Amino acid sequence: MDFAPTEAQRDLSELTRGILADEPGDAIWAALTKAGVLAAALPESLGGNGFGILEQCTVAQELGRVAAAAPYVDSIMLGAAGIARFGTTAQQATWAAPAANGDLLLTTALSAEPVTARRADNGWRLSGTRTGVPFAAEADAVLVPTDNGVFLVTPTDSGVTISPQELVDQAPAGQLELDEAVLGEDHALDAAAAEWLAVTAAIGLSATQLGVTERALEMTAEYARTRVQFDRPIGTFQAVAQRLADAYIDVEAIRLSLWQAAWRASEDLPCAAEAETAKFWAADGGHRVAHTAVHVHGGMGIDTDHPLHRYFLAAKRNEFHLGHATDHLRALGDILAAEPA
Image: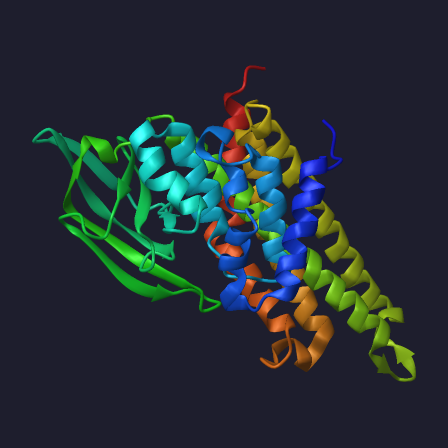
């Protein structure tokens, strides 16, 4: 594979970074929409640029670099792009295109709690609970994988309750409760959407974590060069230098495993093992980088007036959302064990 970014990736990275540098946090989503960054993820038939997962990961990485709690992965990479790929023409017009134009918000409920779906009365009945759903209380629709396919659930559907929750970095989230929720056939996506959502979520979250850890390491390296103790920059002390070197290796492991998984996904190649590998490094390596950044900064690292604390919290949110690193290793082991010798 070729790790060099495409021209579209470079252009999107430059455009997105410029927007994020100029706009305050509450204006980011509107600015990205106006610049066409969100719509770029849709195929040309839906008014987009046809940019795929590689370009989408570039945007997610840039959002991670500013620790933005923006719903790009859930609403665009998974929601709009997923419906564009697996939805009907009507679903694409109703949900994908408006989401990419900033007219509505989509999210995904991918936590491990079981949700069942059964046929009834020319439609479906869904039951179960999903917690920690990003932007659930603000979303116009939630993509919910079940034991019988993926469904679009709206807050107004019968039997649906959404309760606001708050994530570790105060980003909005919610608990989705489905009590025999009544859904019509027009709420069901193609059955192949479930596996695609799981892989794309792993890749999108890993891209976000790459941006978070990359920038946190840059800030920490700069602090170690300028913070003087005992008449020497603390970066010259062996223990500090070793921590920074280990963090650099972790960031590069996140980067390489992410782009390997994203490239294979972009080529429609099997990438379940690569996605689990990326999730492992994003969760495990991200944990170490976040803690290294705080430790090297000392008291400054936990001062809420210092920007670093936002990166620590963002890295922890991504780590929790990705899931336990040990679970990723077990899943990877199952995938490798199932391959023919």
